[in-house]
Image 1: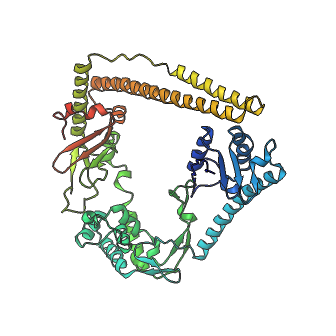
Image 2: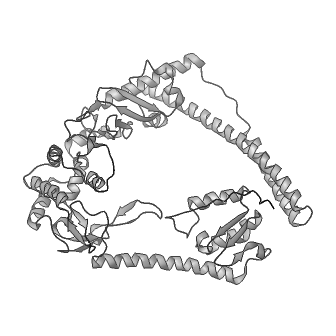
Length: 482
C-alpha cells in the first residue's frame, strides 16, 4: 500500500518563553494552519505548545477544529480526533493550568537562584574581565599575558596620559584589544589590519572596573526582553560586590589615584556644556548623521560639533599607519554634494518623463472584496460538511479550488499594494525635493527617504547607496562624485 504524500516540518522556538504565543516559529505554524496547509500537529506535551492556559485552550478548542487540524500530545495521551464535539474535559484544562503555574514558579526560582549564587560569589561569567580567566576551581585567576596590558594601561593613566594617548601607545606596542585577544585564544580567524586599534571607551571602562583590585562584582545587568541577547545595566548601588575575593592585578592605591584623575576630567566631551558645543549645537542636527561610514574600515564616522563641522573616522585615530587615519570630510560640502546629485536626478526625471506622472488608481478594494467572498464560501463549505450535506471528498475538492483562487487574488492584491506604495513614495519624494530646493538645504525627511548610506574613502572618493533604484541608474554615473 502506497503511503500518502506528506511533508514533515519541525518548529523550534529556543530562547522564547512559552507563556505567550508571540514566538516566530509558533506564528509561522499558526499561519500555515490558517491557510489550511497543516493536517496534524504533534508535540511532546502541552507545555511544548504553550504555557498560557487561556490561549492554548482557545487554539485547541476553537482554532484547530475550525481548520480541521488534528492535535496530538504524546506524553498527555491526548488526540483531538478522540475529542470531537467536546473540550477535552477537566483533565486537559487542569494540565494546561499546571503548566502555566509551573512556568511562573520556575521563573521566580531561576531568578532567585542566580541572585543567591551572585551573593555567594559563585556567579562567574565565562567572558571574564580582560586580564582574568576562569580557573579550575570556578574562581577568577590572573591571565599573565593579558594582565601585562592591564598594568600598562593603569601605569600610563597614572602618569597623566589621556585616553587617546593611551590608545596610541597601546597601538604602537602592538597590544591586542580584549576582543582580538579572546578570538586568538579561541582560534577564531580575523582581519589583522585593525587588531590593535583601541577605543577610548574600552580603556575608560577598564580604568573604572573594581575587579582589577580583587573586588568580585555580579548581578550588574538584567534581561531586557525574553529571547533577546540584549541586556540593560542596573544601577551600580544594586550590584553585588565582595572585596578581596580574587587575586588583584592593580593595587588599591593606584586604582583610586587613577579613578580620581578620571572623575576630575569629568564626562566625555560630547556630554559637557562647553562654549564650543553650545555655540555650534546646530551641527548635532545634521541630516546625514548616522548615515556616513568610512569606506576603508567600514565604521561609522563621528560628526564634530565645531564651527567647521566635519565627519571624522575615530576608529583608527590611534593607528597612524592605517589608510583612514584622521580621515575627515566637511559636513557642509557633503550635504551640498548630495543635494546637487538629487537636483540633477530631478532634472533627468523631468526630461525623461515630462511633468509629474499621473497614474490611475488600481482597484485594490475589488480584490479584497473577492477574497472576502472566497473565504465566506470556504466557511459555508465547512458548515455544509459538518451538517452532512456534502462528503469529505466534495468538501476537500471545493476547498482546494477556493484556496487556489484566494492565492491568485492575494498575489494580485499584493502587487497592487506595492504599486500604490511606490506611487506614494514617488509623490512624497517629489514634494520633499521641491521643498529642499526652495530652502536650498538638505532636510532630514529627504535624507531618510532617499539615502541609505554614504561611504567616504581616503582618496576623497565618495559613494552613495540610495534607497530608490532610479538614483543608482547609469545616467547618474558621470554626475556622481564617486
